[in-house]
Length: 300
Image (cartoon, rainbow, N blue to C red; front, side, top):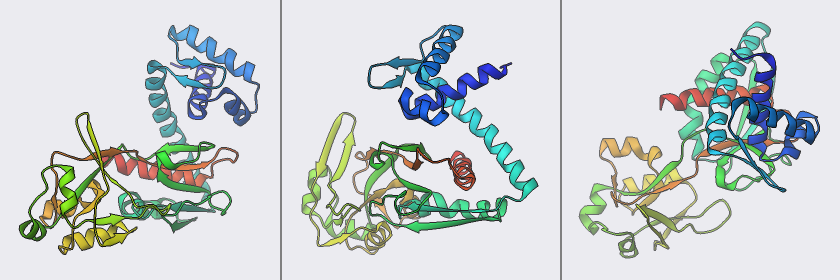
């Protein structure tokens, strides 16, 4: 059984892994860098394994450290969730939080959990702004943002809410009957594609992988949209091929309204992550939302 000091050391270790910096972790914990370094050396000596690789500029977990961090995060998350939920039920937590999210995150993560969240925390006001454009969440007065992990500023604390996500090209059976099927990604140049304009204003090049073979295609098409639901709807109606998250169109694939254009080709992209300022304490409402989503994702 862990004693109090060992549990404290593991909590400190997790903060260092999250920040990838002794200095930032020390500022967050309001202690000295030397104190953190000493605690981590003692922890490694007790466990008999190196947990952190240190350089003059950064710190990163070893393979053993990464594995331990995942287990510690899961354990502490469960403990904190239980304590916070108990507190919320006994004290009737009241508060409000504002979150800025990508449009795709709404059907993927938020819509399924909002009824659960509202039932558990009836006194927490949750405001959700849907915006695909890049937003300075702190400057705009939001408590957190929800974006793909590769787009999140480095000075933010980011917590993945999904596993890496698969992207595919899809079309309707009617479209394929009229225009044929692509065999390799380059064949898309002879098809009608519903192109994507990203939140940063760029036309997105569709990415595909098959094993070690990676290709990026600047697809043609007269329809351009930044809204996945519009592109998917147009694809269902035979207007062209759409490129989107497999999870978002899974019901349409199962129902036969859509089919995968290139079954052997897809692309795995970064997970969706919630992020918040490293200079502010995380509001209880954000912690509650994170836990509710993660519970749902375990069942997905």
